[in-house]
Amino acid sequence: MPLIDVRQLTKEYVRTRPVEGRFGAVRTLFTRQQVRTTAVDHIDFSIEQGEVVGYLGPNGAGKSTTIKLLTGVLWPTSGTVEVAGPGGPIVPWRDRQRHARQVGVVFGQRTQLWWDLPLVESFRLVGAMYDVPPDRYRQNLARLRDLLDLDPFLQTPVRQLSLGQRMRGDLAAALLYDPPLLYLDEPTVGLDVLAKEAVRGFVEDANRSGRTTILLTTHDLADVERLCKRILLIDHGRVLYDGPVDGLVARYAPYQDVRIRLDGAAEPAGERWTLGGFTGEREADGRWRFRVRRDQPVHHLLVAVSDGWQVRDLAVEESNLESVVRELYRERRGE
Ligand SMILES: Nc1ncnc2c1ncn2[C@@H]1O[C@H](COP(=O)(O)OP(=O)(O)OP(=O)(O)O)[C@@H](O)[C@H]1O
Image 1 (cartoon, rainbow, N blue to C red):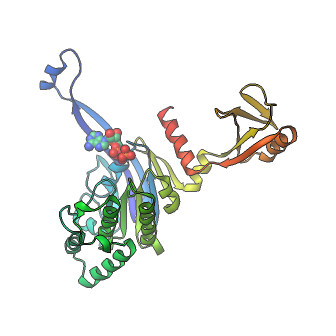
Image 2 (image 1 turned 180 degrees about the horizontal axis):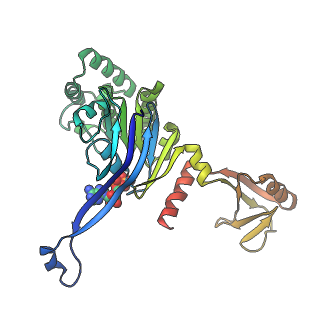
Image 3 (image 1 turned 30 degrees about the vertical axis):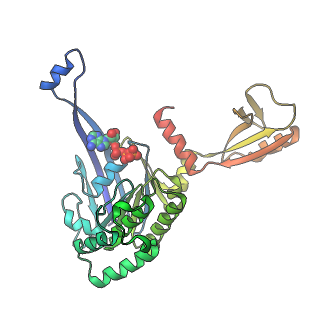
């Protein structure tokens, strides 16, 4: 059995809103119009022990709602989630206590720590809440202090920590009790370059030799490129793509862009240029862009341009995750 098994998971939010119209203000006293949003719409996926999966999607796609369902904070409208655990599968929103021992959760946007207590006291409380045996607690704390360089602010109240320090504290608290599963919701949001590096290094370490299975939501694709072999891409609550990072690039951007800047007075007239069997377009900065499918012989284009034209510079640009995701989001928004 996989570590997490999600079947037809659906969450519909229902809220009421004022009725508009001539008598709107009066009617809201008596009438409640319901607005339904299907935030998560019959999604299926499973995650095996030891994976690090990037959960991506544009704003409002349904990522946070999924994390809330997976962590048992929300009940679904329909569908199931099962997490493998000692003594059999766990349904997060039903078996909340058993489930809590299986998962660590870190939200980039808010802390799970006790605001007024020194960091080390928060850790003690976490250790007590999860019944971590004293030896285990000491070992884990020593390892996490070292790994996350916590000592300079261990005695500082959480409210006085910088965002990067607080995030390191949250990561340590989430792993103090050795959960096999870690949910990270935008763990690098707002962090500087060095702090992001520290978080990424830590996640890699946590996953080393498959110890901790990780599901990570982020808008920073560098997190995904560095940490995840697999992506789940969702939008409008549905899974658009589930597979390897390279596969996403190959599926949605099966081309390379060749950008050419010509040198000298002779430029093709107009905004389009056909050369070596390819058609290029002039870009705003004066360069020509040829979009060449990966299975087409790009060298025909390169030979044709160098034979007949003075080239100042030429670049063959592979699509990367960033450009593919940008295109996909644009397409979905109809831009
Ligand atoms: N409590 C709620 N009541 C009603 N609608 C909600 C509620 N929470 C979220 N939604 C709606 O559900 C949809 C999915 O929201 P969700 O927060 O899961 O998206 P997200 O992918 O996490 O977005 P972001 O990247 O902006 O954090 C959105 O349309 C949102 O407006």
